[in-house]
Length: 333
Ligand SMILES: NC(=O)c1ccc[n+]([C@@H]2O[C@H](COP(=O)([O-])OP(=O)(O)OC[C@H]3O[C@@H](n4cnc5c(N)ncnc54)[C@H](O)[C@@H]3O)[C@@H](O)[C@H]2O)c1
Image 1 (cartoon, helix red, strand yellow):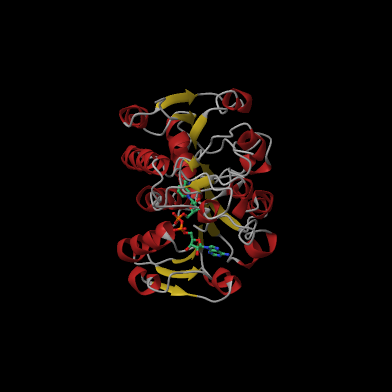
Image 2: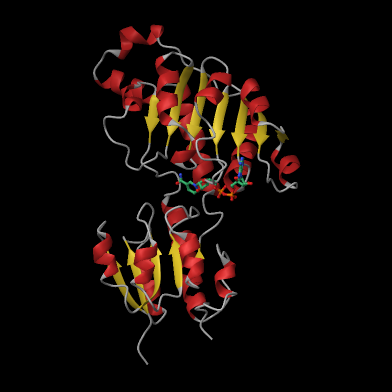
């Protein structure tokens, strides 16, 4: 019997995944190109595709894959897959939940401390020698004791809250209308019912929500204006949650002290974007979740989830379980 074909679009975070697929008895094709046509050429007999953010799986690509059983995202976010189109065709979409808890909470704190202490300025100014004269005119800030607002208290937001409360004695306010009620007491978070109430009280805002129609651009001009002067904003969730044009203006006006940005919309951001002119913004290229420890754990999990779906077993993290309930279901029997 022919081996089922699995397409990996861009190499997996840890290439141990490629070996694990082959050990799992599949024919593996790795497409290391951003060109969707190169992937389409591999799809007619593919049973599974793993897609690395930000490459996108569209309805057209699904139409080129009549035997496709499952689409797996590389991480948690599913905004790069046309989920309704997959459901309509009976194709299951799976993701990888919870792997950001450790690395993204750490990365968020790193960005916060780096922005508050102007780390990139300090590095540059030490190398070129200008820092010794300039340092007394630069303001630095402390994290300990700050009032922090966290929007979205899932795996990452709640872990971030725990670290800020226990490690930095912060007061943490949370906004998340869909929160699991067991989280606030264990994470030491005081929840607020309205986002505006949080924005009015905090000096640091951390965005940790999932991207949905509701959270898209949920932090824009009006919301930034509600923050105290010299507030710090960090986004390690999804770029579209924060309006970067509005943030650039708020920084330019001197209302915001600085920002840490791991995710932008689009990715990459055009190099002409006004936010790049702002000195106290520290960027990372969507690497918050990419520690080698998590890359390995997440890759191993992705492979085992895809292999079990190909056997017809229920996955741990289905995104559209209804795809297997319709008459068009492609669930292996
Ligand atoms: N930067 C990275 O490398 C990286 C890595 C992993 C995850 N992420 C992103 O981080 C975010 C959080 O991931 P997670 O693993 O904690 O997911 P999660 O599902 O555990 O948490 C997301 C939280 O967002 C909340 N939420 C939904 N709608 C909301 C709204 N309108 N207002 C406020 N909160 C709302 C949910 O209730 C949930 O508690 C996601 O956007 C994910 O894509 C980024």
